[in-house]
Length: 122
Image (cartoon, rainbow, N blue to C red; front, side):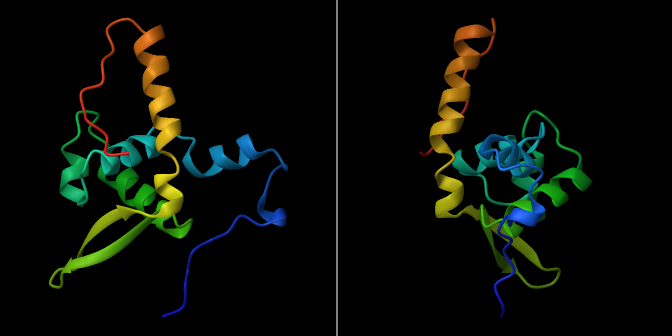
């Protein structure tokens, strides 16, 4: 099977800025929450849906597809009929750990009433 992961090519970028290009992949309000859940040990669609933020199913499906396309996550079938997948972070995805920790620390320090409720396996 041919590798279908996307690499951001110069023609696909809106600018050479690394922040802009990173935001194009993970910069919406849902994607980092999916990645957070993967670090917290969740791996299936139903587990992601059980998160307190209640991500809509169509958005969850889209984000999982996009993260797989950019090799941030890898999916493996665990059931055949119907086909269901387990998701895990790739090395590229795991490298987002320090970013998540920094965001959590910033939120705890600067937004009253926030707390880290999940233990992240970084």
